[in-house]
Length: 67
Image 1 (tube, rainbow, N blue to C red):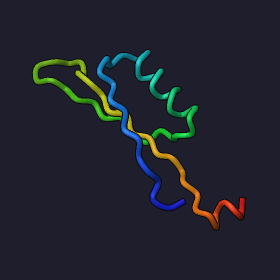
Image 2: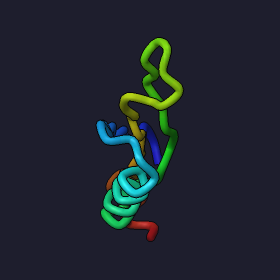
Image 3: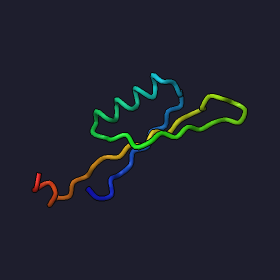
């Protein structure tokens, strides 16, 4: 694997159910969870949105031949 591309998903309704739905949706499509970043509003304890980062392994032709 070289240079795995990223997938960034914005979650505007930051609840455990929405984050779980997002993770399950993209992992079943072959992406691997990388990280999550929360955006906070000043004076608020709850995040206003989240960005979920995924990567996906890309095999080059010679690597596919070995598999």
